[in-house]
Length: 197
Image (cartoon, rainbow, N blue to C red):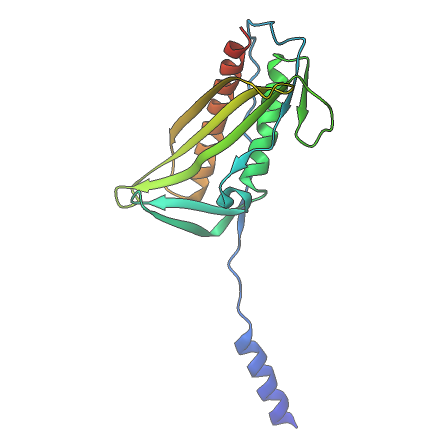
């Protein structure tokens, strides 16, 4: 009986493995408030449509690209929430803070608005180069501003931002991606300001 108990205990000890600690990172760019000249859209409402993105940005997995071609996933780092949702929320907060529009609604809202902003995230990833001695991130978003009633496009643009990482690891990539998204959001607001001229 004792031998059977010892054997079963050893069996279970052998089967248990310890999982490495998973670091969770937050995508939360600083939202800068700026004054914009245009008042043409000030009495209009806008809905920020759901952000379209690749499947990789709709999971918490943190992807990176090595040597321009090889895509891989960090094994001990992940996002606290999906980048797609975080980018959508940051875009909403940034446009609200711009004061360009009378009302800014989320895609979840049932409110009818004058305008609709469609956003597609083309790139949102960290790159490693020079045998992992250097790292940078790239954020590329394509935007289309539509009149809701006619579905006519008022304007469209592509915002592209590249930022060097301060360290060659997941944390350095997260810091750089937050900075790149912050710059991209300012560029989006500047473009909307121009579209309202």
